[in-house]
Length: 137
Image 1 (cartoon, rainbow, N blue to C red):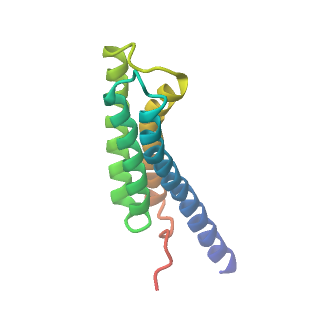
Image 2 (image 1 turned 120 degrees about the horizontal axis):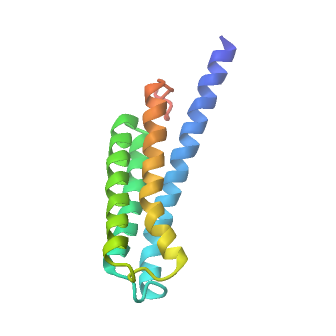
């Protein structure tokens, strides 16, 4: 019995840790975009700034939602991640010279890839019936 309780606490810890990293990633993208718009994104398109900002908002809000309803958060993250990656890929194929700098290009694709990875993680742990991320009274 003690071993099963310890296993459940460990699963709860790792689920909370991963989605907390998702919250931090979302905050960093939300904070990065206004600063980058004023400094390093000069010459990049606002389409790419919107993708990075929407990826940050999606990851931030859905990671918080995962603490309450993991299945719904996974659905948002998976669908939003696919859409963001498709938009980033289409934007790069159509506007080849729009993105300047490796950091901006990396953030552009990571905005969708991180959301997709978190969605896959959330769907997997929901399917395996891991305990909820919050201790319910």
